[in-house]
Image (cartoon, rainbow, N blue to C red; front, side):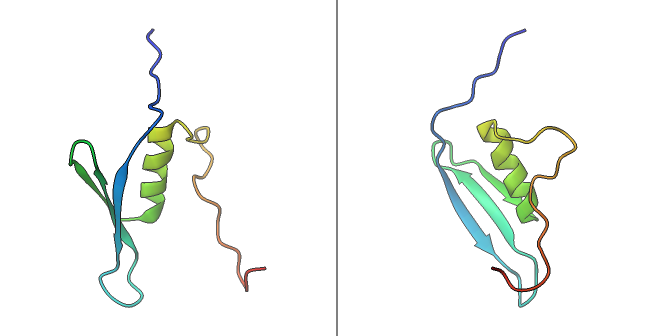
Length: 74
């Protein structure tokens, strides 16, 4: 089986927006080499995509982002 190697350099144009106050953040990544744009309806899906592209994805079954803690940040 052939091993897939990860690139040493990736460049994207990241766009983030909300469709109104309190609306969830949306994103798109545009590959600066190919011009291909990928839309993301949720930030956690964007994060998972970047983890996959860089080979930094956690083992299956583990969350890709830490849950937020209630209360003020310290």
